[in-house]
Amino acid sequence: MSDESRPASEAPHVDDARLPKTEFTRLVGCALPIQQAPVGYPAADPALAAAVAAAGAHGMLAAVRMAAEELSEALDALNSQTRAYGVNLSQAILDQEAFEVAAEKAPLVELYIGEPDPTLIERIHSAGALACRQVISADEARLAQEEGCDLVVARSIEAGGRAKGGVGMIPLLDCVLEAVDLPVVAAGGVGSGRGVAAALAAGAGGVRLGTRFLAAEEARTHPGYLDALLAARTEDTALTEAFSVDGPPSPHRVLRSALEAASVYEGEVVGEMHIFGERRQVRRFSADNPADTATGRIEAMALYAGESVGSVREVQPAGEIVAEVATEAGELLRRLAAG
Image (cartoon, rainbow, N blue to C red; front, side):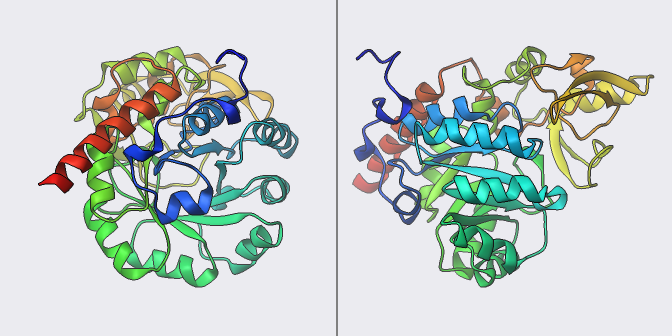
């Protein structure tokens, strides 16, 4: 069977001896302590999550803007290929029907931007899935453990996309590891093997990369968005609350060029794209990032990106990204262990 015709669950992946097994890898059933972040629908769709899992890492499906029927079909497709993945949902705009679908069909459900709710965690567990929550402080991590989460993602202020604030990754990881007795995934500002090695050496059970996977061949990233990412440097992101139209106000990190383009744009509508299966207008400073179906002034839309954007230098298959990052991280950790 050729690699092209091989199911993702059977595809060859990186030699897992290059990186250590951790509480995270044992819990979620992947070989490598590397996780692909849910980098926004539709970029993080089933094809991306499956390709990441096939390479030995852990994939994530961004389901915030997916209707229940669409999510059900996506999970059926993923489950035919792998179980090393999770689904990400925003509790702030939680669609109950989609949540039920995720709990019933996905192996892991992750919540973010919302208050602790043990009833949600109980529902996830009763359906047989793992429960995860993004946290930005030691206090939030403790509350996540108390409500019954199986693991937490410590999301730092360097991360792209929407959050609630926070601090740098290493200080955050330090206090979260002290606060809970759960596997902790470090997220924010990591796009290379060096960052993965640093987080693992600091005690993380897994490390999440997001912006780097927007340049994966399997990601449905709009070409205009992709061009902006490839042109950006590490210092070319901004933390703002500007892109909060049509969404809950919250801090978010975007490309500085997008903030500047939207600020000087004089119209009320910057374009159109499909959201929840419908063609809708995208208003200036909308919270919606451009899907691959978007048209209009893409450069003035919410181009989310983390401080790791300087690591995005070319378009690569997701499996190649995983292999490159894992190899670099493994070599650095071995060098550190050898003194």
